[in-house]
Length: 171
Figure 1 (spheres, one colour):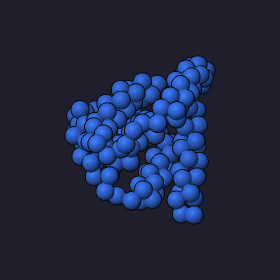
Figure 2 (tube, rainbow, N blue to C red; figure 1 turned 90 degrees about the vertical axis):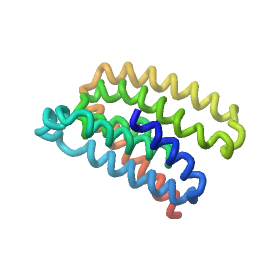
Figure 3 (cartoon, rainbow, N blue to C red; figure 1 turned 45 degrees about the horizontal axis):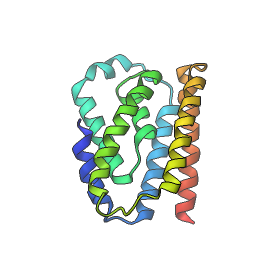
Figure 4 (cartoon, helix red, strand yellow; figure 1 turned 90 degrees about the horizontal axis):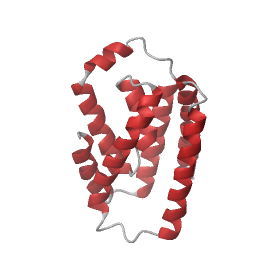
């Protein structure tokens, strides 16, 4: 809930910023999220978990703002935030992030509806279908790996995406 107003406000702001700036910001945030996930687990996980409402509200608002501003933020930020900031297990973070991603994405989409133009369904439909199939296969793979192994694999993939996007933006 804390992310929804932030996603809407940042979504409206993003229409006024250059694409290269947004892409560069995305790659830096992705790299930071990956670095955070590659670090060894903190010993104070129970203290973080007990921090409760304040930490959850701040993490939610920050995630909503990034989702609205960059048009992304779902898995690559929600999962690390839930694991690192709120001490969720990897399995809990993945499941919870799906709800967070959906709500923040819808809130960020609302201010963009007037300026975004038409959706290219020839691109969107196959992408959506592939994402659904990938999620299904990912779930089966996740059942066979430990949470820490999944976390490291996710972080390495995230670093690769961040590097490619930064190279594309700079060149």
